[in-house]
Structures are given as structure tokens and as C-alpha cells.
Image 1 (spheres, rainbow, N blue to C red):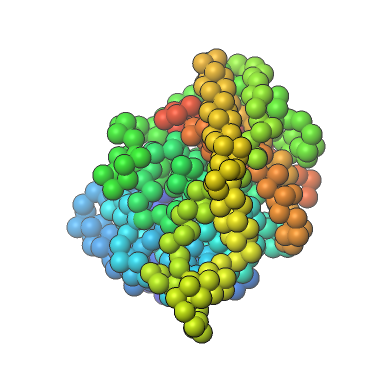
Image 2 (cartoon, rainbow, N blue to C red):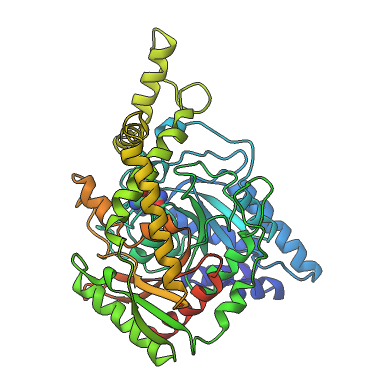
Length: 488
Ligand code: GLN
């Protein structure tokens, strides 16, 4: 085996930072093509058990890696993500690759274009390994709603990795990619990142383009990174963030150097701890891990004070009304005509629509289409959808009031650590209720980072959620970096 290939293998043994990998490729000690091949080998070994990847994009990945190697051989300076192996949640499209959104209804669909986030990653040198498993249409908190089977948590394979971006979190935790893209509508990046012990980022609504994202709830959907450490997550966000003419909801605000922001000390920052996030239902071991994280921030020179977010209790019903209403509209396009699966035996056009949707969608997706259609129907619209929009505004306003007094708010990311496969599948309400700490920021449009913050006695990771005001990602990264450095 050539020595570069051996180096590449060594890099796969233990997760490395973007900078370490890029420097090794730049110096010529490691080839991007060998690194990609070593990751594919590892994926082959681990995927049968963990079920992370739904499809691989080897040809494209190796061609990109070869280009990076050619640049390095010429001695040209390499771009930020040169040679970094990255996986993509299968709700973001990649030209010519299957895009399933974890659903049978999209079986066989191969989109002809790249999502903006995907295109930007590649332009920065990233090597895109393949498409990653998730809950069907990103609806779920455990990855058990995928039509292609659940993902297992690499920390404990009898447990869920969280969801809906469970595969994206598991891929980083098992080092089947150095970083991944996921999406977060009500917690789908933050909760799985916390369950798998990695870093996940919820960018401000409109910070990252949704072009090429298969929509779930358009006023809530965000695209964001997973990585093994805060600085790399910050670097990746810097690459994918920014205005995109293809998505009119993207912000024109300039993109900060998030990695540099994350390097700044936290001394003097004001941290808020919301009392409502530490009440009933919070696992005592999660609570004590988060308390250690708060103590570490104090020790690093932050001031800590309680803040109140009194509408927190209304967040779950509000989220599940807004999200399902928008989903029922977005999913109307899957009719057996335009994309993917079509039921074979139908006597009429309306039969074909009905059977294709009935056979193509899973139980949770159908539940949400029914709920959402009901909430939007004449006679109920004012009582449900309109009311939910009003509560959404109240939640956003109380966050803004809190951010007038503090720079960041810290909470547990999830009230419980990773639960067992099958533990909550029979009780959709229990599954929804566990989203209590994540849906609030989704409704308010603000940003956040989840960072590993200790573990339970059984060794299950705990994540701390660091929230910041709109477009203040730099502050969230700074605080998360301090928690990471404290090694709780
Ligand atoms: N668990 C939440 C839901 O099922 C959030 C999903 C998400 O963020 N995509 O809707």
C-alpha cells in the first residue's frame, strides 16, 4: 500500500479537523482520493449495521477528490473544505442522484440539479460521499419513520440516533463522514446531534438557502451543518450561508467569519437560563450535565442570570399546527404523476392519485397531512391555524425581549437522552412532546448551536442548546466553543 494511502487510513481511524485534513492534503502527505476511498471502505463496513447511507455518489466524489489532488500537486492554495468528505441528508437534492426524502413515494426520482448548499460545499472543495437516511419528509424525532428502515445510534446501537436528521448525526459520530448537512424544522439537527454526541447548528431562518430542499414546512425549514467540533461546524456554515437569488427568503446580510468568531473568548458575555426549560419532564442526569455546563461558562467569565419565556408551554401545539398545515400544502405535489412512485393498478385518474398517495406515504406523513388539512379547513382556520400564528408571534417577541438583556440563552437540547428503538413508536404524542426545547427557536426564527455537554452514567451523550438572536450565529458559536473546551 502506498504510504499516502496508509496516511489516509489513519485519518479515518480517529476524526480529524478540517484544518488537519486540508493541511495534510496541501502538504502532499495525504491524497484526497485516498481519503475518500478510505471513507468508502469504512462506510461499507459500518453501514449494514447503522443504516446511515441510502445511496453513494462515488463517481462524483472521486472526480472531485482528483481535482483537489491536482490543485495540491500544483501547489495552489486549497479552498476551505478541500478534500473534506461530507454526507448529505436525503432531503437535499444532488444532480442525478436518488432523492428519496426517506419516502417510498419518491422512489426512483433523480433530480436534475443541485441544492444551493450542496453546490456551495462542492465549490469549496468538499467531497460529497452520498445521501443520508432520515425520517420520511423530515417528520419525526427518532429516524424510525424512514421507509428505508431506522438508523441506529453509534453510541448504543439499541437506541435511536434522534431525528429527523438521525443519519447525518450518526454519520459524524461513527466517522462515516467528517461533516454532514441536515435540516431542522422543529429540532431535527439539534436533537439528533445531542443524542449522538456531535455538534449541530440551527442557522437563523433565511441564513442558508432552501433551494433544492424538499419542503416540509417552508416557514420553519432550515439547512445546517453537523460536525465533530464547534470550529468545523462554524467553518461549514460560513461556506453554505448567504443570499441566494434562487430563494427569496434568504437574508442579504453579509456572512461573518464564524470560525474566527468562535475563537473569541466568552468573558463578559451575558448568559440567560430560562426557568421554563428546567421543569417537569427533564431527566435529572440531563439537568445535572447542563448545570455543569452553565458552571463552566461562569468559570470562563460569563455572567449568568435567569430569564423567563412564559409561552414555552404553548410551543408544542403551536408548532404541530403550523408545521402540519404547511406540510399538507407542500406534500400535495406528490400525486404519482410528477415524481417517483405511481401505483400500478388504477381504473381512473383519481384512483391513481389516491392509491399512489396511500401506498407511497407512511403512517406519520399521512397523520400530518390529515392534521394539517383539518387545521386549514374553512370553519377551523381561525380557531387553529390563525391562533397558532398569533402564539408564534408571542413566542418570538418574548425571545427578543430576553435577548435585550442577555447575549445567549442556554438550555438542554432534549429533556431526555437517546431512547430505545421502538420505545415511543406507539405513542406519537409522547414523541411530539419530547421536542419541547427545540420547537421554540424554530417558531421564533432565531439561531442556535447544540454542543456535547457531558453524558449520563450509562454513557449517553447530553447536548446543551445555545440560542442567540437573529443573525447572531457568531455569539452562539463562541459560547458553544467555551462549553466544548470545558470537556464536561
Ligand atoms: N421532530 C419534529 C417533527 O417531527 C421536528 C422535525 C424536523 O425538525 N424536521 O416535526
